[in-house]
Image 1 (tube, helix red, strand yellow):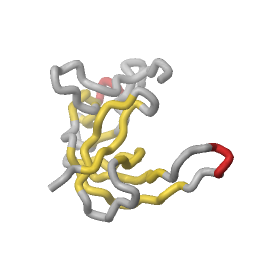
Image 2 (cartoon, rainbow, N blue to C red):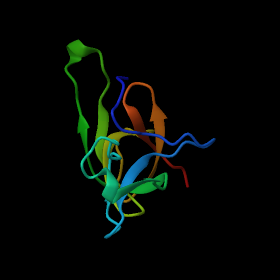
Image 3 (spheres, rainbow, N blue to C red):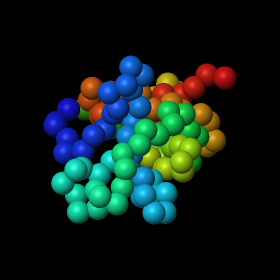
Image 4 (cartoon, rainbow, N blue to C red):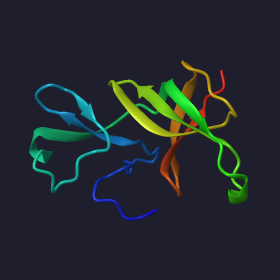
Length: 117
């Protein structure tokens, strides 16, 4: 994964995805703002909860020539609230409202993994 200009994960023993919270209004922005942003002084970097619910998704069917299997991309609503787009893993076809947890990923930075009940 390329070097990012903003922090993506906390350095805590249990890594957490990071966002920026507006100090005045409390609105969350993902990804976290880089320190060089003109808005950085108005925001604080905070960890977001790891588990949320699928808001919407689509299944991508790559060309047979690519050798890639179909995969799901979608939006997950995390508490805060913050809605984040990413790859949905663990099920061939997600369901709206299902719970997914965000996890670190070497290729994409993060992915969402289905949470078993």
